[in-house]
Image 1 (cartoon, rainbow, N blue to C red):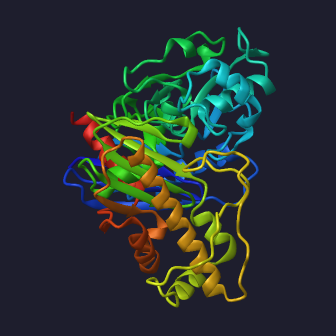
Image 2 (image 1 turned 180 degrees about the vertical axis):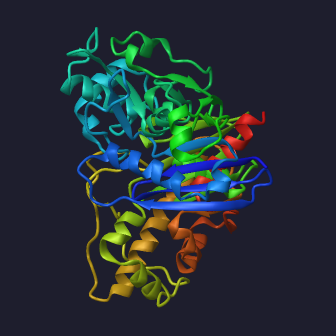
Length: 423
């Protein structure tokens, strides 16, 4: 039997899932990120550990692998694919330093006009590490890759290939499937990866990796996607008006729409999904803020003491540090976590209510700007397991809330691999 492996790299850990052609799960593995001094090494260790945890009898029958990563988590690499600097994470807003230059380069309201976009990070690197032609530091040539691109490269060995989901915030034109002229005219254009459709087969796993991990020599590595799109694919949502909210470390909204909506002013962008558009945005609020104040056990215990039908009067904007991307796009937006009541139940209620308000505000904004009307919302991520939070969110959204068929992004990435090689 043919099997398909999806690997999801999130902010706190990574997960792998193996499915069969009917979508049944046959194995899964997990890897948690501890405090590490070098991110890329930790990712590589996690990648191989996840595959090694899969039973050997399944590993040898995996036909295709796809990997998702956090959107706009990026690396600079030399010609051998070795990172030459510490990766920059998805929520790192150092790109604010080059926003003036970015506004001169990109069209008004473009997706890249965000301090956390991939292109903003590349321009920051250009400022920090001279990248003008011939792009050399000693005898090394730099390439710009996303997290999922680099991890897939470790398996297939073809350096410099990305997918148009990850490349959206680099400036790739997903409507015309090419880099725009304004981007190609930049002196750093030689750093840009080749872009193909998500799920497209790239190459077979390298022979030495096949031997090391016990994979089939015919196993194909496919182009990946972002973690939030992978969660959308896993959810079961497939009709215009259906949406997925990912309640993970951050809050990510994805609404399937007949119309494309892009507005950098609000941090809104559209991913291509066949002949439809996946319109959405990502906020820095979410589960990471909750975990700053509560353990998982406390979250469960305290949530059960909340009256979900009663609206909390506490009005927070929960962030770990200043800056948000959507529905307010402001790299200097301050966290608002006061006043903090002595009762932890009241405090948690205020946090959950406030995140739900941000979610509702996000969907309202998408529709105001022209997306298909919201009909129902699937929920993915760790927060999907909290029924009290679901009741609070339902009160704000006023549409049916449905648990995702599968909540793991790795499942959606496995589907991507399966569909990619069977087209």
